[in-house]
Image (cartoon, rainbow, N blue to C red; front, side, top):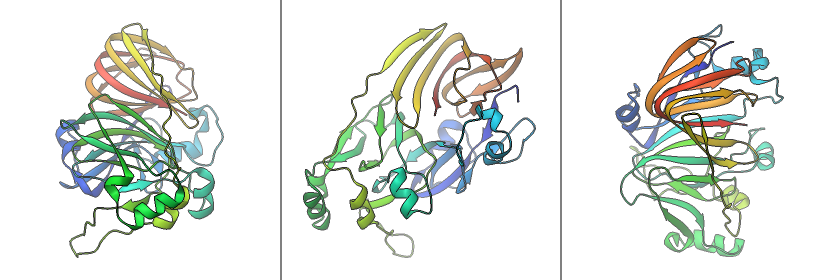
Length: 315
């Protein structure tokens, strides 16, 4: 595999979804309530499909099983990362995710879920729920049981270009009017704490998972201090947002051409704005906003050219 692995996303309809994935990226979405683009995914609940090379038409998980050399022969039973784009057309439920140990024990061997968000776009004065104000587990339980959500939940105003690191155990929710690229562990385990008493078409409320949520919530809330590292690489401005236990995440802002050596087992890349091309061994591949690809270990050098922004990550 001497070229990038291009991927066709899968889409998930959600009660809070909208049409931004179609409007912004021209994706063919299943309905006007499409909440999630699983862009680079080998999770069994939604695998992206390889678009080129010897495994074209097959799910990404097959490449992980059959061609580990594409991924630097790293260990692990499952492809560890998942890249999504989320269209929060309405508020998401307030939720929390377990760590690896808890998920492995309580969720049939699933990974835990530490994640991070890059705000691609949002309405003016959009908010997130990021953390809580309880100082003890007893206070957390009391505020939840009494429905004192305004007192419990920590709200943060956001703008395009903001970045948030969300470790497992962090109470959180994307709120109405935000479009977000999420880099996360490959997990689909979510514990809902509060869902605004919403009901579906049949009048049923969605299930809450309060016991598990209280078990895994970090009390008191703590946020890691992020020190962005920004540097130039040829005609690219590179910002490293976070270098953490499960992933390192960057923004590449291209205004011309930049050459890269492959220094990681593999790179995940998502074009979130603009267009350009990726060149490997003289072979050029056109990319545009909404294109997702992996640079495998079997590509030693490559160049990226154009006027565009990418979110890039590696384990």
